Length: 263
Image (cartoon, rainbow, N blue to C red; front, side, top):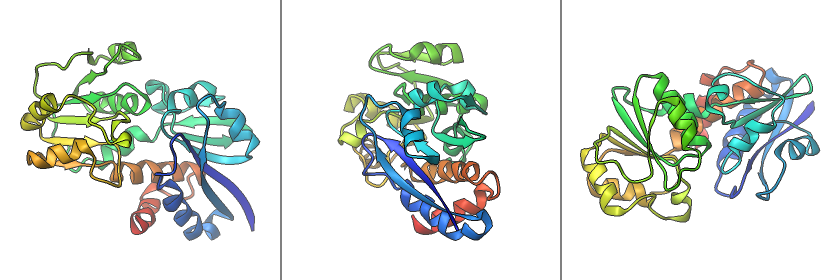
């Protein structure tokens, strides 16, 4: 049986559960796919050229995580779907010798929300994940505010119609989303007292990090604010990516079942 290589680009990458859940799918569906896929973590130096690495490793597809999603958008031969709007790519697929970029973070995040009755959201951070979430939440009719420590990247959100801040806005929000990398460093993304104020008024504290109780989620728990980590988003975005890796032979719902069973 033919072998095909896949992977996930990131820095850091050792925390990633993507290899576990994707390899479970490649094993489960190998007969239907007609090939055996192998998916592995790829630690990229920060100055790396993603397209060159992808081609050098002879990959058929890859996921992209922190901090490379915006750079991946820039190096694709073709961009499809909502990735065009959010200028952020988390899924790369080699299609007819062209590197094609997709974004499955946007829909993956929305599918992971157990309730859909939120009116507004505050996104902390302005990177690739934040862009994808803002696009999807705007599409679903929510008012979206973005808070970032610097002005870097905020022009994108302004064009999208988001309210942008470099100092914490004095408002209440249904959804408070941590899309920064602070949790990977075991830090809060924002001043503790300010966060407390948001959590007391909020309906859900959501951290994109997964696998441990982050300081952000720990604070929400302490205040008895409903909270959620990024595990379900990971599995949804991964199953949507797997559908692309399988050239739509495996619907994401089937991939989701397998991934959920191993993680």
